[in-house]
Image (cartoon, rainbow, N blue to C red):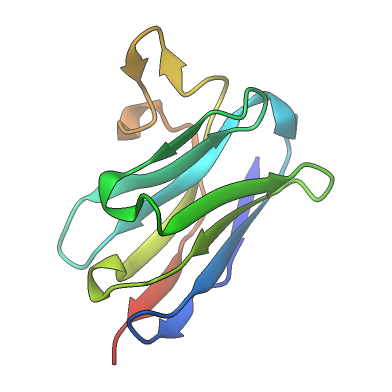
Length: 129
């Protein structure tokens, strides 16, 4: 399994960026793929996830209405469109993959690092004026 991120960079507050995660080595449309963010000195946290098969989505509260996750199943790529970026969005964004579904009954699994089976190497997003 390989997850290769791209699209990070430096942007001013209020600006936009689109991250991409190109996946290979597994059946793309059977699993869940998304993004974690790790700010300097803080723990890695789930930002957004997409169940490729069922099309369910997850957004962390602080990014709802500003970030949109999507996929191109032909290109086997997951995108994170980030708008109205804020300084607190700064961090390394990691593409992450969980086999199967995001949920187990009423429990959202992908917010816990232990359920993530594969990681990309990360791409840095800096929001600063």
